[in-house]
Image 1 (cartoon, helix red, strand yellow):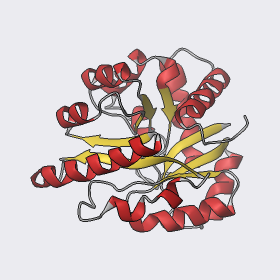
Image 2 (cartoon, helix red, strand yellow):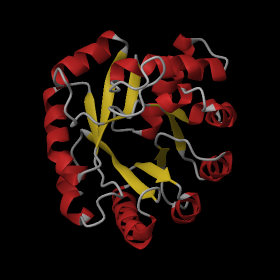
Image 3 (spheres, helix red, strand yellow):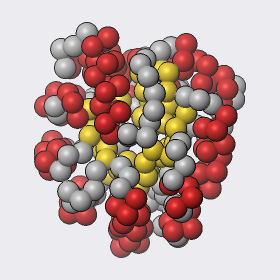
Image 4 (cartoon, helix red, strand yellow):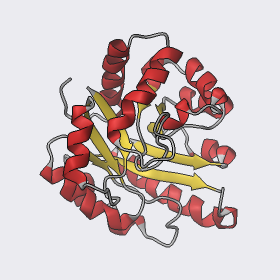
Length: 252
C-alpha cells in the first residue's frame, strides 16, 4: 500500500471523490493526505476525511493567498483534530509574483510560527525562492519539501535540518534528469511520495488530470533510482510517512 502524502481532493474530479478514492485503493494507494492551498478548502477537506477512513488532511495557505490571515483558519480546534496531520501547503513562490515577496514571507512565517507552537510538521512549497526558503526554514521546524524539484544545494541544507523530500510525477518526466540525480543522492529514509493531484500527472499519463491511482508510476521510477524492489520501496515509504506524520494512524 502506498500513501499519497499530498493531493488536492477538494478539486472538482470528473467522477466525484468517492470514485477517485476507490480507483486509488484499487491501484494500491490505500491512504491519501489531502493538502489545502486555498483556506476555503479546509472545511471541505475535513468533510472528505470525516467521511472516509483512509483520508487525512494538512491545512495551510499557499503563497497565492497573501491576503488571508492564517490565525483565522489554523485554529487550535482545527489543528487538534486527529485527522489533521500537518500544516501545508505553505511556502514561497516567486515564479509568477516576485513582487509579493514581502507579503509571502510574512504569511509563511506566521504559519511556521503556528506550526512551531503546535509542534506540527509542515509541507513546504518553494519555487524560485531557494535562498529565502533556506534562510527562513531553520532547524526549529520539521516537515517535508513537497513536490521537490529544487537544487541539490537546497536539498543538502534541508537534509541537515532533518527535512523529508517528496517525489512527485515530475520525477518521471523525460527532462527531469537533474531531479532524478538529486533523489539518487537523498537518503532513502528521507523520501516520501505524492501525486500533487490534480497536477503533475506522471508518464504515461502526462497531460491528463492527475489522480492518486497514478502514484505507482512515480514509485516505479523512484524504485529504479534507489535500486530497490517495488515492495521494499513501498514498506520504506510507509515507514518514512509514519515518522513524518505521526498522527497518520494507518497499518500497512
